[in-house]
Image 1 (cartoon, rainbow, N blue to C red):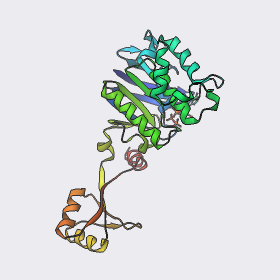
Image 2: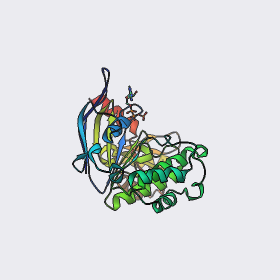
Image 3: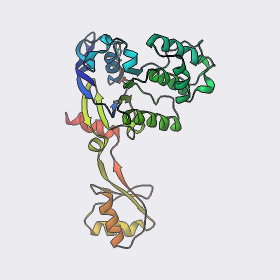
Image 4: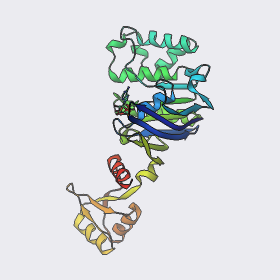
Length: 291
Ligand SMILES: Nc1ncnc2c1ncn2[C@@H]1O[C@H](COP(=O)(O)OP(=O)(O)OP(=O)(O)O)[C@@H](O)[C@H]1O
């Protein structure tokens, strides 16, 4: 559905997006992950014609965004949620957008209730919180019920309940066959939402794969009332054991079932058993030091 090929952006002699290529499939949510300044926004803006490319192409269903007869009906974007006239009400803002993309007025009330802004629809946007502005931006993106959603940092300003709501919205969109790209600089915001991670650093794609394959379990964290006995049993079984300051034991390189089996055969009750995942910072460190 979306194909990005050799996308490059230079500002003067600085290359801020460098030969970025990827394809996004319908029915999937892809997380575009990278630290501040990595090039996520610039890539998404080039994909949607907001920033001219230096070289490369981005197509949606085989056509460049600017060549689509009604791009807003095909790609719903959340690229700058603060760019809304503060004097307009949320409803007026969406009515204007609806008229531009040829969506009936009745759809405005539908999307307002989808994003939970029905009660605030007649208030001026200038008085909205950051989270409400994000929701309004998402409402605008959903107006035409487009097959593709491109959201830049949609979790900005949302509380944990809002982030869960957005996760359900995006997963639901993909489950109906939609294509979703969302960016974040925080792995925790997207790791339970996405099927795939595209990791960008310094303008280049540095990793592309499933959350599990990129961040895969590093080991197991385990707790027991009798941590000392558990540590002895694990060491006797040949595992290396690290003692954490909070009382947990970490067993590098071990899967939780293997640790659970050692505890069971030693008759030790566990109060916690979970895989330890690498964080995004560790992933970046590994990717950048390896290259
Ligand atoms: N108009 C511009 N002129 C010059 N440099 C720019 C311009 N827009 C962006 N940049 C630079 O391009 C780089 C990538 O910025 P971009 O906003 O795409 O990163 P990002 O990954 O979205 O980061 P963030 O998470 O902070 O939004 C940054 O170093 C930024 O300073």
